[in-house]
Image 1 (cartoon, helix red, strand yellow):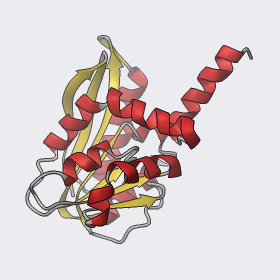
Image 2 (image 1 turned 120 degrees about the horizontal axis):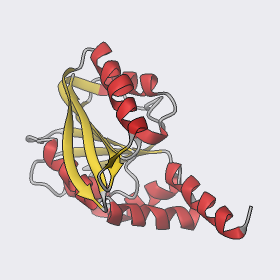
Image 3 (image 1 turned 180 degrees about the vertical axis):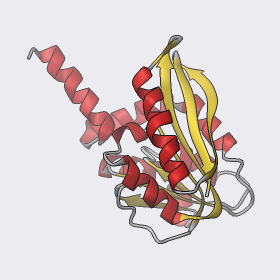
Image 4 (image 1 turned 90 degrees about the vertical axis):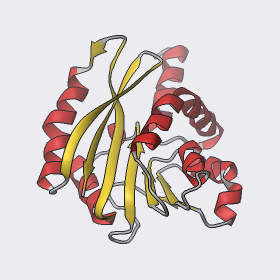
Length: 207
């Protein structure tokens, strides 16, 4: 393996669980790259007053900052596997953390270290690709949601007009059937913005 290939392999591995200074750099890069679909996701959550919101895979905390800055009195919990990114999220949201409008949690979606039925809105942006056990992940999401709560899982299913068959298959043969088995209602796929040539979609539902 040559040096260039090794470098790109290191970069690719950082997207799943960023670590150290390189991980923090990747976290800031992801904020810039994913801003259109992040803002679109937040808008489509249709947050009302005083909601308790969970972001799975919060990264460096850009979306957390957007929601906590709204005039809705929301409380936002950000969960991530990466200590490095949680540190960046804490730095970005120092004031909101001090005011207890944001909470940061180290953990995995497969075993959420959170109590039952506390979130009225749950979302995740570009992290579902890295979930090792989709069925267990959605069971955990369902567990921590309040009745009537909304979930939105944002991802990309194509680039430059070309559809990604494997992602389409995951959406229609895995994600949607899992949500329906768990009795989520109004399960649907939303079309989102094109960002850097990537087509954004989201799988959404109501508990």
